[in-house]
Image (cartoon, rainbow, N blue to C red; front, side, top):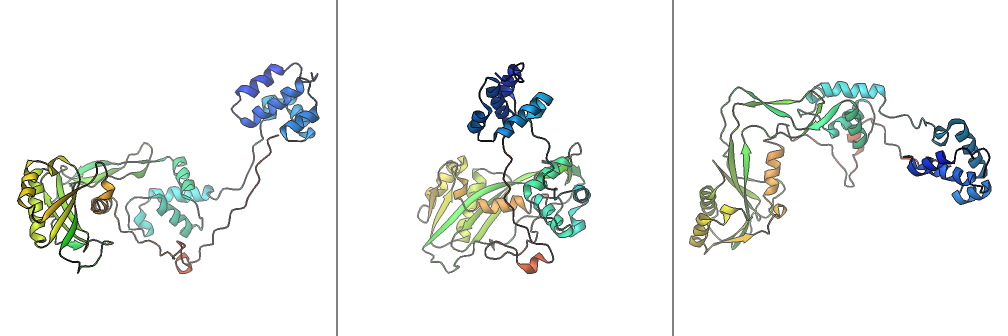
Length: 350
């Protein structure tokens, strides 16, 4: 047994078994073998290092104990988000995004990345900005609603329109029409999406009077992309049958194949009686259970809840993109190009 390590085999055995640092456990295991009498050269070959590294770790362990086996702090590459950039980020978070020309009311990670790139010339990934937000004391939480003065509700009904991205041939044959039908609940208060807010200072979104809820029934014509919709006080069988009557009046010719989910009032007594009375030209197509992604009008409801009825303004202009996803030079302006990452070998274990 090594005379220098002879009094401390229990300490080495404890470090090799229970230390949270894997490098410390590996080095303690190597010194434990040396303490048991194995040659230093044989232990070095077993652990894939040199004998001088084993002797150096033995000297450091005898002088400093567990601290001699642990790695010393490394400075590493200077962070891109230094103290000045963090101060700029904190100042921007306290201000409204509209102060820097953004048509939104709350900050997002993407907005902060673009502001840092355009104002400071610092390009960061979303994870780095997210960690900086946490260090500054911000959390991604849903705000609370604060009631204000009552206002007059405007009617939601408007002429039917062609949904963006759903444009197809308007001259489709009238022999068969595929219609996706569904309903959505909408509140008079804005939908509260998660936003960044400082810990201990919850954000409040002003709302008008008491919250009221109503239903929107909609049908998306797959051939033309037109959306037919109508509001109702609630989602029930009577409102569903009334919307079916409206759908039959707006599409008076051709066979209608209506895609439906399996909610109860779609198959209730009123809906069944209506289908039996119109079975000559309207046929239901039932979707499998729990498959909302197969109903195309769900995209309309998602857009409704994410932009018009959300407390954050939507429709923010995006930067133009090339075909391969890169930002063109004209849109980048004078921002410095991103440097490629260099491969750096990791530290040795011993």
